[in-house]
Amino acid sequence: MKKVTIIIAVRNEENTIIDCLTHIQNLSYTNFDVLIGNDDSQDNSKKIIEAFIKNKPNFYLFDILPSENPCLKGKTNVLAQLIQKTSNEIIFVTDADTYVQKDWIQNFMLYFDKKFTIITGVTLPKSNSFFGKIQSLEWAEIFGIVDIFAKKNIPLTSVGNNMAFKKEAYHKIGGYESLPFSLTEDFLLFQSIVKNGGQFKQLYNENVLAFTQPTKNIKDWIQQRKRWLYGAMNVHYFFSFLLILKAFSGIILLLLSYFTIFFGIIFFVGELVRLFFLYFNLKKIHQLHLLLFFPFLSILHCCISPIVFLDYFLNKKVVWKGRIF
Image (cartoon, rainbow, N blue to C red; front, side):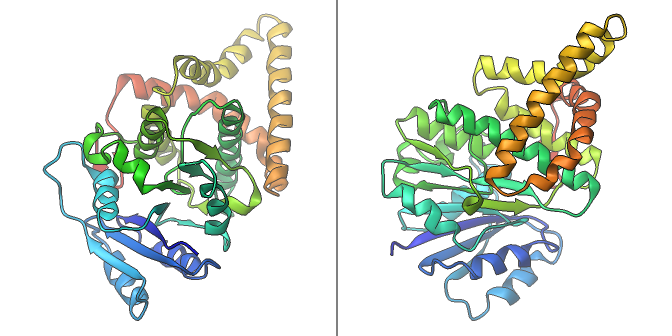
């Protein structure tokens, strides 16, 4: 059983970090270290972590210092410093507001024994709130799209709360220290490793399903999607075009349907195709109950997605973890 390292960046996560660490402690894979980076938390995160890891010799907490390297800011700086502290070959990454399945590591390790160097699982927001359920459905759709492209061997992205990679591949690209700063550090790492010859694997099944916290309101949701766009708009020109088309097509078709029913029919057929797409993807991860929220997801995308893109193009600032980038 190979020893692996799990790294977690923490900034003001006092309400979620215990749930995250408890699930990691209960992993069925036993040969691992956990490196936790405290990124200048202003709440009780550090004290909570210190109490939890006491008498757990494979859990380590580090205070992350600011870097003079302009490429290393925020979470990127945390990850870079933590990776320097491990000699293990395989590095797993998750977030402080995320919890993983019991067999998470085994299900990834199956593919590291083959040719793959960076692997991604599936993550959904987990919440009993109405808005949280809509976000879960939205994330399932995004991962379904990524999975389709991956099956065609077209690399889109990885997700920073449910991924793993070989340290050798990380060092081949010079690490985060040699990459330009990005608000989507997971996307940047994934694209850099793949462009340098690394083989990727997108897993879409219940065994690699992780759960994270949804955004609490529309304002935070817009900021999160805006941050994602910084990476997504640089994936591929065709994919960028599809993103813009998807964001504006719904509201445009609905407006045009006022003049002729033809455009209303196109909108309806498009949403029907989308519904079936979601059905087959949710079935893979046993989350079919989320389909009940599909009409509200359509409304959200028609009304709010155009605002995200307009805000992205008109105002480049992003608020993330209490910092402005």
